[in-house]
Length: 166
Ligand code: ADP
Image (cartoon, rainbow, N blue to C red; front, side, top):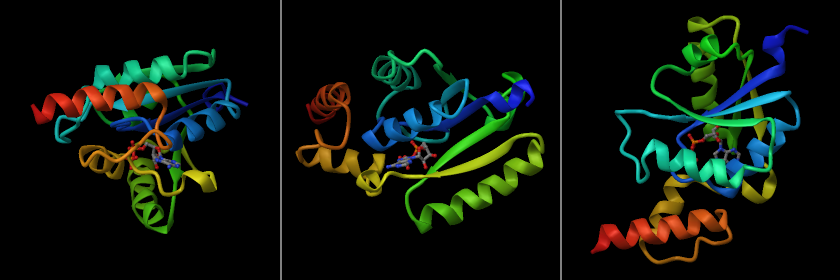
């Protein structure tokens, strides 16, 4: 087994992190010696939280896991993988609609970095409907999002939405 195949990454926007994200991260971390959670610093995507805020939330939520490192990255995930000797990229899939998109992305990434393997991990049934975009919308209309995100995210969302509606 090469060093690369013992290190995995799980990239995403995490805007904000949900219980579905945390579940997939924790399950992935059990499979590898080291897991990078890579917060996309994507200039084209409008996010509710800055990359630093998303990274800080994930760091606090995941602080008890010694083999998880949360970082942010501006650039292609395949380049992050090369720079950090990552052999495996994990993507969570919730439903068939995710799969079509993820499959195309995997094909593109394989062309860009043939040594990076992509693995799809199905969501846990209780989280299959959780989506950051839907959670932001529900929170904006005052719905209780506490069953869907960690307590720290509930607090951060309350503060951010209050600021936006002032
Ligand atoms: P989204 O905005 O759709 O929640 P992200 O880019 O933040 O997506 O997701 C990062 C990774 O986490 C992706 O691989 C995504 O498929 C996965 N993911 C997101 N929500 C869930 C969930 N509820 N269950 C499993 N995986 C998930």
